[in-house]
Image 1 (tube, rainbow, N blue to C red):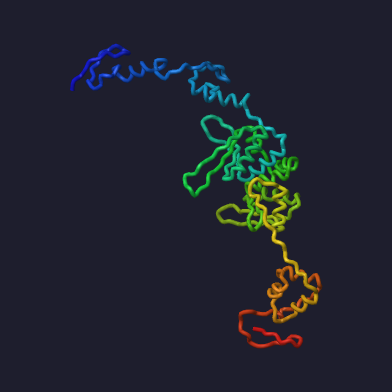
Image 2 (tube, rainbow, N blue to C red):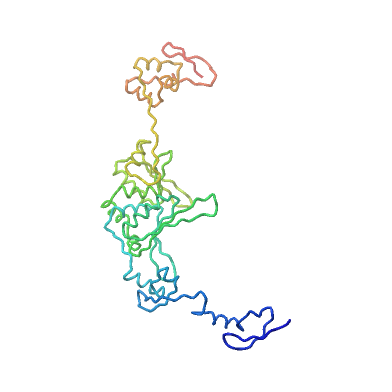
Length: 356
């Protein structure tokens, strides 16, 4: 292999190199890096001078650092600035938005402190599949002077839905929230807006299914407090405890009254999600006279279901009309057993009745 001797353009030393690599200008990588570093590099751009916002130290920033808006020379200066002048102080006087935020945080929301090398703030956030819910919580955080962010987390598996996450940072809010008890939360909600608190808790912990509007939670104090507030708004509720062996007991709160009360709850609270209005089917009214009802009712060959079908009403409505017209009950001997063989015959007031 033929070699060629060349002179390094940086240090001036002679070096031998194979002929097929005769295009090399430097004897080693160190000489090449030194020759092409700094202003000598073909992509070099002038650095701008900035001063640290905390300590005032002079910084030479590259164009990409200026574009990102770097203001501090180190992380320590950044955190020291946020402790003092740059601390985010929320506005605790806006009780209406605070009551909504507390309702969400008692449900699916969270207030945590992340563990890092440098002291960090409390994180106030919510992770949910519904974008409207996260936007509503984000707007409430903005109203109390926090600076939340919205993020879309895409799942890898097609079966899983994408998740929306909104979060903000504030030591002041985190310390204030961790110091609250149920009594303190009750005072804030009573001074603020009961409907907003119910809306926040319903959007995070409520369901609007066939059984009606329900709230579920594992904390007895929270669910009993929600029960008290809902009853103050004029709704009747039922309370149920579900015991579990390995996990904590689950408490369920349900609004009574059927579809009418569910629709009234949604129209009064005005939630962002789970706000489907149910169709109310009109109840068929029995418009027959007392004599017609008595003739059918005291016919031993007819059951209660057959009588209600002939009167075009349900069995419960039929019994209500019996009480309305003061018709005495006919007794158990009138009931007709369908689908069984007739064994013999019995008489009741001279009328023959088939019995099994």
